[in-house]
Image (cartoon, rainbow, N blue to C red; front, side, top):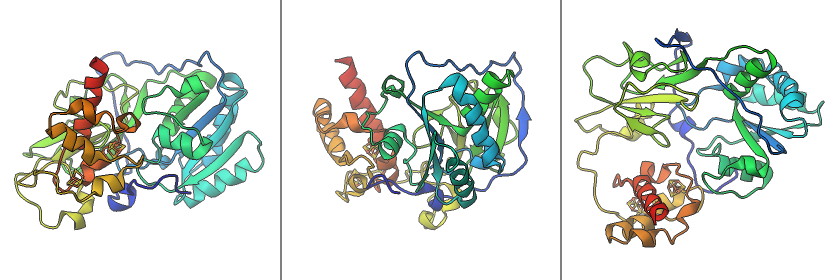
Length: 340
Ligand code: SF4
Ligand code: SF4
């Protein structure tokens, strides 16, 4: 099932290999504890996202441990105490054949759960696209879906809910993916909440390289230079990219290096009207219009072209051959609108 026109399959273009040893990293302070509050309003739909669409996202095997049925049985135990009336939907990458087969086998014996194998094209797992694809429901970026009776969880949150609400365990750590050209290798770590980025990246960054670190990835996340930042439950991955001061020949065939974000050696220029940004936008916007309004000094006018529909996926900036920071422009215009 393909739920939208644009998007891009990053998983196929930038396949990442991870070291399969998972290191535990402890916090120097008392770790925080995962808390889950059952929402006050009625929950009608619970979507479990097993369809990561970013190469640097946590792979399903870390949580599922190749035991999909056990994972689904956890959901079955969570259901009566947390969301007794909800219908459950499992979104799974359709290329994970074994997981899809096991989940379908499980779901055909249960009437509360449905399985949705999805093409893992970024940003299919965004909440706006996921609810549209699975529930046929329209929503806006940043909308609190709880108010519509919809909850979306990733696999790690389901596991934490099971351990804290059902097993009554103290959950104070989470898996974080570390990847990128600035690191010695791509790896997954199990980090106590409250641990600093500095401690997590210690001895993992390549020696002698200049680098840029992105918390929650280069497309949707934030670049940070503050390594004292602590890990909380919102951090999923950290991407560290080597800052290059030389041009890379044929970057498109060296996709495993994830070199697409750092160097702008001469490429930064005006819009060349290629329309790549329009074609890739998963919600049918025309990001070049925002750029043209912006450089004319008409930031408020940019807001007129359905900007509120933008899901901030970053694909327009990613694809732009002129390396225009389109998402940055969009966020600036949105913020301007909020201040009015
Ligand atoms: S960041 Fe917004 S405008 Fe750009 S591709 Fe994504 S949804 Fe479209
Ligand atoms: S991708 Fe960049 S250069 Fe091409 S139309 Fe969009 S803004 Fe212009």
